[in-house]
Length: 201
Image 1 (cartoon, one colour):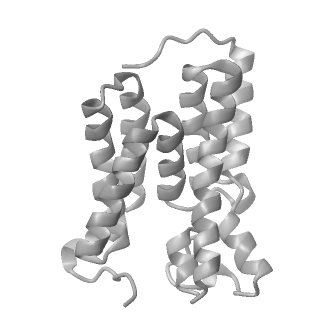
Image 2 (tube, one colour):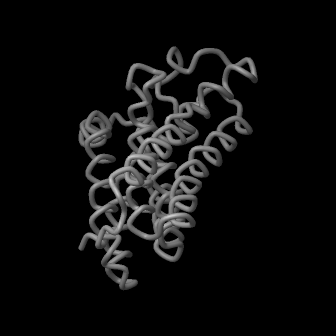
């Protein structure tokens, strides 16, 4: 179900563009550079997210990247919700996610969006966000595979949204989950082949 829109075209554009720009800030790259960790594009998977930052061996940088990537999704949603309401919050969530995945500053080659997705979900409806985080942690504990945890927890988030009776958020969360699965295509192939890198391995 998509919430009724009561926003002007100008306000929709303002929310979308602002949220995209918030989401497009590449905190992983910035922190890696500030902390002298090198160019993330040349490390591990070349991704700009927290998992790849962790491959530099700097746990603090990875934690900060996770927090900031999560925070930018939440910030975009909460700001839009404060000024324009629920419909705007969902637009902001989608736009900030796209900003992270396709940042204009990096020639539209960004991260996979998992942390930003969690931040968006927590801001839209925190009970479902908490359950999604617990799903990620449980899957990671059992499998030791970050990408599998992202895939399962994002899919489960749709179930949590329905279970907790928040149908107006199902459309945007389902859309973001599809994006996450598409951006993990190579990971899915490696998981099936049994060659996907494990956490702390």
